[in-house]
Length: 550
Figure 1 (tube, helix red, strand yellow):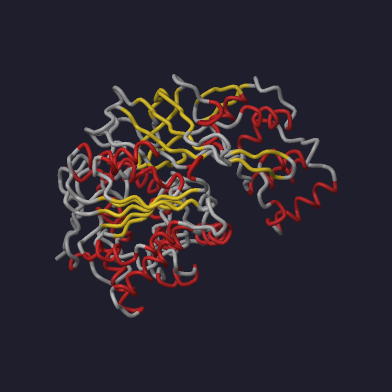
Figure 2 (cartoon, one colour; figure 1 turned 120 degrees about the vertical axis):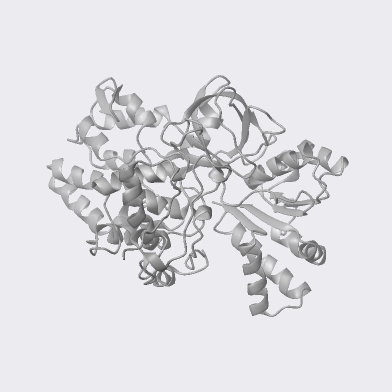
């Protein structure tokens, strides 16, 4: 007798085709096939309906699944070993940096799933993982799938199409009762305000951004991120147009829209990333032997163009025989940037606030600009429209119990979600204690939201505020040093059930803070290294230690 495997409730918002395909597809994803467990013997897996109260949870939270490789401290080969035998989406997830930093426009799990479904074409978006990750992703993606194991569709079969529709429904993108605005259909929100936060003489430019959501139906929780579709710098677009011998008013068809070439390059395509297809196309149309030889070297040794953008490559192969239509065909799409939301809807109805640090640097004698950060800092004015959507957090939010103490560590723009946390706790009259560690370069010019924080101290909402300004003394002091100074008190807060949150730079700050936290736990808790590791692992498991790093 054949046993049926029920994944979804009958009322789930899927067609019969989607429902039938989903049984096999998700069975592979959640590991029932790879572990040797037959569907008939497996425990029932219930996914909340997309329009249920749990719809804001990520797919990761909806399907309880163990990801032993989801640890940024593990080397790549170890992560891949832990994912051996898993379906292809999980192998690809293991190849990523495991930071869930959002620089790719997704978290690690969702990025892998988007590649498999065909929703995402680029394999180079995991910035922290760099070339090593991109190389493994390419190997996994191009390796022929073994029948009945990976469920790899390359996004070109009907299965890929159904997977794409299912992923949308699972994430609430197209379910009934949800906002119509999402990653695929962003809301054109008017800008209310852009205000510089740094004082005169600062080496930094940080903007406080306010965006109007009135009438959009968009809602969010503190800890969520705002996806922002940026536009490329007009000066850069103009130079790329010139590099292909065009004027910019030539019409191009992109995503079934007919647009002027300049508009398409500004709004639809990434100009900071050189695709393999662009290099190969240039090689195909270039007739100069010197250029051909150099392009072959680049294909063999991609390090030759580290840090280059599309303009630098087109300028190097000049004059280019590449036609505008050919250029558009080999560029990657412009991806949204994710920013931690720095406001609470309870405190700021119909608004969403961001804290954005302007990014710019010099490369080969030319100023290079962060796409979204300079859009906010240099070009947008009140009333300008910006395309946005909400990306729910993955557990990075305030504790359910308003009495629970919270410790927040957010130097620089990492303060963004904690401004939102404090607004929320004030608006809800939450009695729990709040401790913020903040850091930047100089107190006189870089103390972001200083007046707000000092006012919160006066009204006793902000129980403790410890600051580290690295350049205000000869020896550089950072937030982890302040943590060590207050190690005894910090341990007491943890013993009282405090949740600890970290937001900001993933490569250095988050690593240093994690090491310091473990040192404090081991020292003041009198725990061995192994016991300390277990203590921290338990905190992570219970969502008492959460990080939003990038």
